Amino acid sequence: MFITFEGIDGCGKSTQLILLKETLEQKGFKVITLREPGGTQLSEQIRDILLSNKSQINDISELLLFQAARANLVENIIKPALENDIFVLCDRFYDSTTAYQGYGRMIDLDIVKTCNIIAVNGLKPDLTFYLKLPLDVAKERSHKRDLDRIENAGDSFYKRVLLGYELIAREEPERIKIICSNGTIENTKNEILKNIPILNQ
Ligand SMILES: Nc1ncnc2c1ncn2[C@@H]1O[C@H](COP(=O)(O)OP(=O)(O)OP(=O)(O)O)[C@@H](O)[C@H]1O
Ligand SMILES: [Mg+2]
Image 1: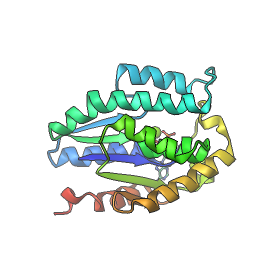
Image 2: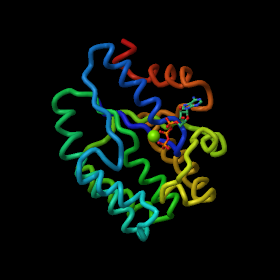
Image 3: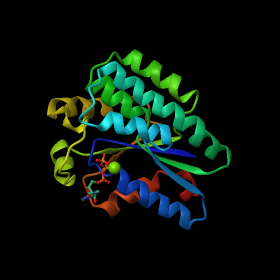
């Protein structure tokens, strides 16, 4: 099963991904955790370029670099793991590209979605958790000193990203579960667990 976590920076993706990994492993499942962009040597190198404040990247280059990193991760890690019945938990996937490069950067949504399709070559998450949190709460939670290149895009960018996530989630309610991330870590975890079919049989 392929599960992805989505939402703005500081919404709790990494926290919840680890908690779900622990729960699944306690039940005897094999699990790998990944992050996007990243997960292979090439994809981590692309991540460094994308997040560095020294990089001067136009919007289309940014879109294509994310997709290059994704294509490499999908073919080398995700698809082989799924073929071996390993749970794959991924911190961000193509919904992030739709939200950030589509709604945030305002690249034509059809172009973004076509690029997503090319990069994943038929792969789709079975389940996606969109951890919904207001911008001000997310900012308070992430105690980061140095913001990366994308985090430096500003509030109006992030407001578009949040609206984008809402619209993306509404388009595919079966796959994308909207989880309120404004409560405690435990509450959010329990909401997520309720939505994992194999844990509720
Ligand atoms: N429900 C919660 N209540 C309070 N604090 C939380 C909650 N969930 C996570 N946190 C804290 O908020 C901070 C951000 O969480 P986390 O790193 O999981 O977010 P993220 O979505 O992975 O962010 P990023 O996109 O920047 O990696 C962490 O310090 C984490 O411990
Ligand atoms: Mg994180």
